[in-house]
Length: 463
Figure (spheres, rainbow, N blue to C red):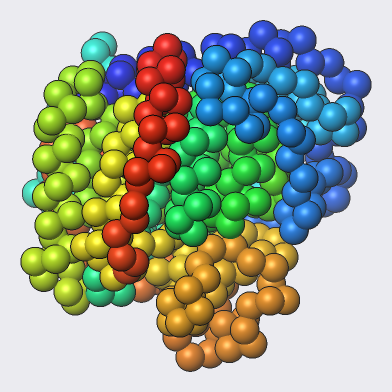
């Protein structure tokens, strides 16, 4: 796992560096992003967040950073409006563990921490990281796997009480669960433009530090109708963090997404898939459900620890599974990334083939019949059956979603209820425990590919 941790961390650091100077210059001249509203329990924490953004009426300014396909322009730091500024004293340091900058000593965080009954947490130790950046699994009983430690066994069914069950596969047949980790990437305009052109909606797992660095990128995700989810603040191995650190990694990412998009996610994905029942339990206290996967493209490794040809083969194998009956009874959720030019170009290369091979290519909320994937119920997702019938997936104003879906009748589920069926339809593929386990007709890409190829060639500067 240490190779993957180092490689992904370096890639994330490269695209983040250009934003740090701007973040450091930001002053406390803006309005605070939190209010003094008291919460009755830890799961009410999100009610203390405020945001200047109306998620139903997002207007992204026309800037080179938001419209260009040239990464040298896209990845220039930009100044946001006064009411949207980052108040450094209210946040962890960018790309550091989320208790940094004294966050665990603030009244805001202490109130949250003290609202949790920690006596109910499973008695599971904090894991140790190796000197190489991996996980020390010495002495852990993988045969019994008492802690449902995914990194050791790919366990997806919590073994302790009071924990939200994992989602790791779409239950619907012939379905590709479309997910992308590590955004928002500053240079994703060409990629998101393509998804918009093809009317494809994905579940985007955003890193809190990236959201603060590139807020308009996060807004693009919600504006385009993608499902936005939490991917921690600093992308570290969660089982190696203390209780305070785990809570802070999740909480401040939630706060960042709310500030920039106006919504608070109810779903999250651990970096590298590193989760056990202690971490799951803490996430549950924030009403967060873990989303994993049952297919991993390993796209992050392309051109790094693996030749691109190996990742091409992974993609092709998964495409073949869509037509050979592998997913004829239930679908998948696939791990892919928007981390750099290579991973986004691979997505562009294979999405047409995926759409040819699978009947349905869509976000996790839709495939799981999750009507409300955010705490705020202003955005809703249609049930799987309604979305397929209408040809309209992704987030919509709640008022426009059918009465059946909104009420939870028929194929639609009530808020988050689809998560309780997660994993019932298929078994996750056993992958290397030391690494991140991380239908439409074909599309003629000829007019688009030349433009995108030029854009992604330039993006090599940041890869």
